[in-house]
Length: 102
Image (spheres, rainbow, N blue to C red):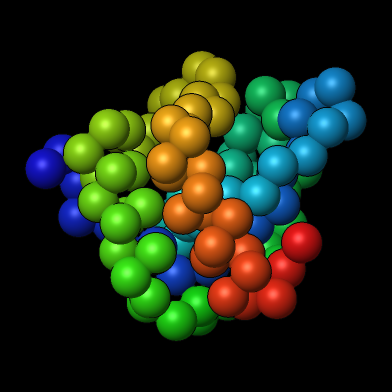
């Protein structure tokens, strides 16, 4: 695995075109998203829920993210939206449902 990130929060990210999407992340990724917003790569990010339960859906999505993406460092020059396979989008939808969001 590339990373060993533990995903424990739900955030809403607003793209520059004004559309939003929900992402499962952690404080490190939230900090990177805040930095991306300051640099104009995205409009804003806000945390919707902290300390979400580490359900089987979170575990599956966490494995996918850790195997597929690299956490950007502070020198990032763009925002990489985590693309989701249909199966992973279903996992995110279940996480949002479990946490009564959306």
